[in-house]
Length: 312
Length: 113
Image (cartoon, rainbow over the protein chains, first blue to last red):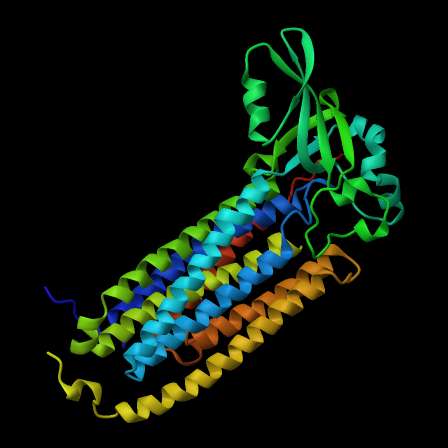
């Protein structure tokens, strides 16, 4: 059966079918992402002072990824314009560029940004213990400036103190996941954490550290020892770290899936367009327009994701 | 089924000219989006007095960027009426969704603390 109204408008809607179809789909996508964004707003407004982290993401890398996604929106619309002007080679070049941009975005996210987070460690301190760790928190300094207190010590974990069957020892840690494995071992109890401090904790009263930096700095050489009894909870930068990372991974993960879906569709077009182009170029142009509308929507979502997670 | 005639349908030349005009707009929007991305990043390191003020300003810039994408790249500056009707419903229900969140902060039964 042939699909009707692929090129000519349907008399009652005045639109070719796929156009109204994609807009209906995008309307449902607005509700999907809208629900998650409103969840973000809800959690953020309800966060206690000091419990909504700032400056934990790599801003230059996020900015670069934003630019790449914007570029891919331009290339896909140029691919469509090329089809409209019947320039098939141009179309393939622009479509290929779009696929490459999408892949770069995903690789940066999955192979660089996410793993960097999984490797980072955060220790939230009990309220009554915060004074003891004041040299790493600088809360007196922050209070004078009217800023939210620090409740967490972050950096790279390099060792933990444990008691194994009553005997105390220090175990070197190469990745935060080793801690959870250790904690699950029978007869093992975590007694303390040795952590290489992030800049804000290494030099907490330096006014330069009052607000997050643009350039991402690796943890300093300075170390701190945090006793387990003072810890509210300690974990790598995973969804369980905080509401912040839970919403970050949920929304960027879902967004990444959408980028992946777009890449799959464009790759199909890249290899399977010639026949349709020769027979019905307008139909192909409409197909690409519809896929492009989806792609622009994904870009549009990122335009909001970038500031709310990376910058604010 | 390849015939030269499908590549030069009547009225196609006009459309060609229209698309060329579009392409210029796409390039301008591309430049504007990159600049506005830089602006968003720069403004976030400027203290507007409170976090709320910074958030509002960042959201204004993001909305302008999103508007450019929607109007120019997604062709919403010259779309059929039916699409706008559909989008009006979307906006209405999306606002409803955020309203539900806001309800949490509107508490008619205020308990004494």
